[in-house]
Image 1 (tube, rainbow, N blue to C red):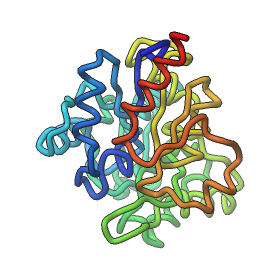
Image 2: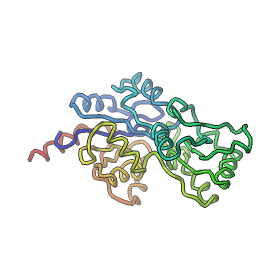
Image 3: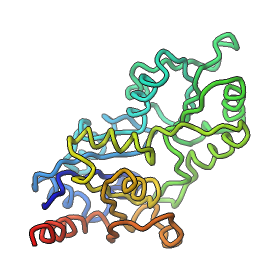
Image 4: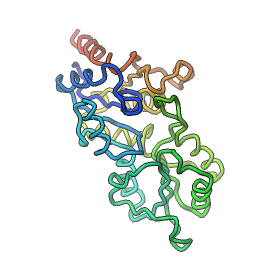
Length: 270
């Protein structure tokens, strides 16, 4: 398909909503697989492990395995190993992601002040993000702990509508503690570098498909990857209009991606 050798694909809002396949998404991914393109599912989802996500998607008919999936927790584990080796980490997250945090030393909040963490790691928002937990994280950062966040998404789409996500709380922590969080998932350049390495292609040989114009599409474009915005999931006309840049391509849904790839292939051959 021309110079395109791999497709990076967000999951929530692109392939599924509340883990239910969007119309035509399964068939489109099968067609892309059969074309021989590399595929990586890149997600800021922090409520499930790679293996759990793979099982759910495979049960819904998507041709994927855990090896195809790159999650913010998995990238975070690699980031902490490189930048904070041996650090004791306090984790604020909704969902069990221990399997994808291999090698990370997570301390419990019942270990006392003598075991104060070196790093506060913020994952995905949920019921765990109450006042006590946020205030405890604030205290750790005030005492010198680094603040690392898997992402700063403000919201995500569910079958009940938009729901608040980590970014809505992270901004408050940053302002109160007067620090800026180190972001490991999208939209960080390191996340896209990891995704490209995962599929073994250069930035100019990849497309990124997402429903978040800032974190998925424009962030990918800043990393040199062609961005494709879909009008599903968290997409809103007003966020598209007010975005900090212009997507390379805009399509109605992931089901339209094979047609776009065919157009790009024909253009490259002319």
